Image (cartoon, rainbow, N blue to C red; front, side, top):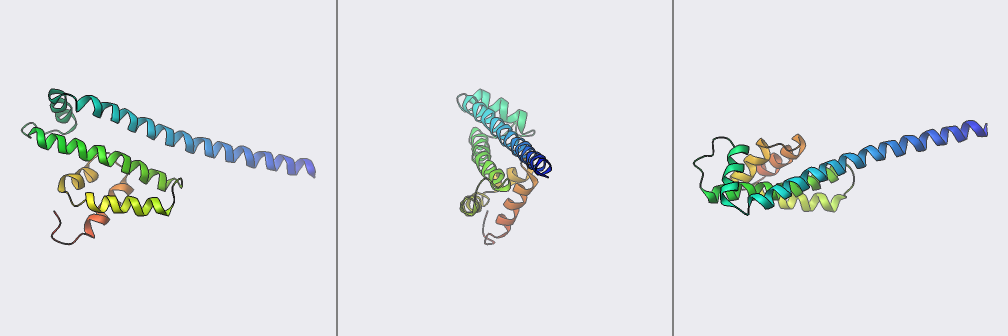
Length: 145
């Protein structure tokens, strides 16, 4: 009887370790991707020619956009990346309700901006993150732009 119980406990522990290891690997993978984008942002913002090239590659049809518009688009993405990471942390149960309140407060202000909102819907963010942005945008007074 004791050996069956010991085996059962070992199996449960192994399963929990496996599950947590996979969860940590997903989180670390996401963090590394976001760190890679931060490195790209650092290089791109250091040179207007590189910003123009990178923006045209990642946002087709923007050839005639001014540098101010290009900078704003990249800053929107730079702001959205850590907020998306917080969203993932909440979704994975790593952050508590305080993080949810802070995230929603930050996004509520940012989704007022048409460009920020459009990027949250069109870019490669989690569908649930895009839905949160839509919900917060729809909660805005009708004069929001």
